[in-house]
Image (cartoon, rainbow over the protein chains, first blue to last red):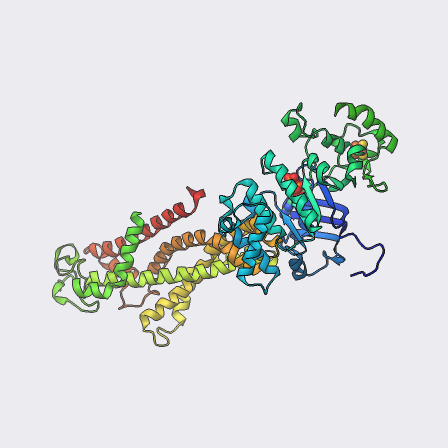
Length: 346
Length: 285
Ligand SMILES: Nc1ncnc2c1ncn2[C@@H]1O[C@H](COP(=O)(O)OP(=O)(O)OP(=O)(O)O)[C@@H](O)[C@H]1O
Ligand code: SF4
Ligand SMILES: [Mg+2]
């Protein structure tokens, strides 16, 4: 749209995103002042423990909170120079599955139990190509199934989701998400439900398809290994807030936030107990109804209070140029702690 | 299973009532004064006059054939129960879906209306309504005119039972991931409602529709008993019970037969509904 503009917006740009849910227990502040962007052809990794607001963020981008009467979304979401938070339901619906699509964590529950996999892909295609007849749509669906590596696609077209193996099912889900050539693909823990061997295949597939289609990808995961492998940029979330973000290499080489250190400590290694991996940082996630005062991470942070008491009273702001962090510790102190106390134990 | 057999049997009997009465009974309005003891007005024969000629005995005073009247009574009773269940199911499904799917103020309004209707004194309303409506309208006789009025009243007051179930199921279904996934591909609300949600609701709707039939049978009987149901001389189970009250000490059979029919029918439909639920809903097992 902005023809000839020199510093055009990134393909996806999210600003001041807030998502809150009104519940019987109080207001859940699921995402607070989040901001990030993804360029076409690039991958953004979003990491954070369970309940940190990763899925809520991605559903907000797709406008899927609109049907929840208790949800309130504010901020700006720019997709290819179009603002989505203020757009009409119908405008956003037309973008969903067209310009942007999502791969869900559990393809078994994300596929309809009563319809064949093929018919669901056909339907997803025809929503965005109203003039196309059934036969053409069917060919397109079979073509997509073949492209994601499903053997005998003509036959599998007529199978139900429960007749597929876990890996094949996720491939089918990917085929459905990509059927309209989306320019933004959001993958919400696409491999968590799969066997380790299959996980790598699916990630390879997503990477290959991204190269082929040139899409922007948001990869949501618990697994820092996945981010290290695929992502160009990383966003670390804690308690609904972005607490560290930057280029993936930079964040891995020189992590700044104590919570990120904890996550790094949970990267899979042969000599580490599985239980420690599942609970990377000691203590429990914060309540999103009553966030801890000051830095939301302070009840679990071993370094809280090292720099006076600001951690307990003041909310740290995200600061820095390219690599940003939200922590009260001065840069030098963080570098020193990381080098001397954290790195030797990783 | 036993419930299903009895239910099917009852339906066949009701449908074939004209034929069966021709073969095994007498016309419903035919008086048989010769069967009645003139001093007590009760049937001459033992057990309410049960004989090979009159399978269920005869009515006190008039001597009308109880067998034929029970069969025609089954016809009205089941028609009212089925049609009002159909009406309740239709309204309950539409409003329950709307409340659960749209949420917000639509849900608030529909939920309040359902609470209101569930607390409403249905019988009193029916009595008041019937006394102001004409006995027959259009080209329907007084029997079918009243059947439609009863269907309207019972069906209208019954929809919140279905509505609540449908609303609850819709609320939980719409949060299911396949609905979210389908939305994420740009599916229209109409498609989600009718193609994704409704097929998953079919089983519970069918079960609860079956389970309100016995309630409707009882309501119809109660209204006829109170004199605002099927108008005499048309036969109805509730009306027969009401007539039997005067004679129960000298002719108990005349009370036992319609009472027993109501009991068996309601029991059979309940068993059938429970069986259906067990078969269709794996969670309830
Ligand atoms: N519809 C909703 N109503 C109320 N609260 C909600 C709703 N959806 C999400 N939440 C809350 O928002 C918070 C963030 O949830 P979210 O699903 O984004 O976490 P997540 O980071 O994706 O976690 P996970 O790794 O387990 O998927 C959670 O505390 C959750 O309970
Ligand atoms: S601000 Fe304080 S509590 Fe929060 S992460 Fe930094 S050191 Fe820890
Ligand atoms: Mg999630």
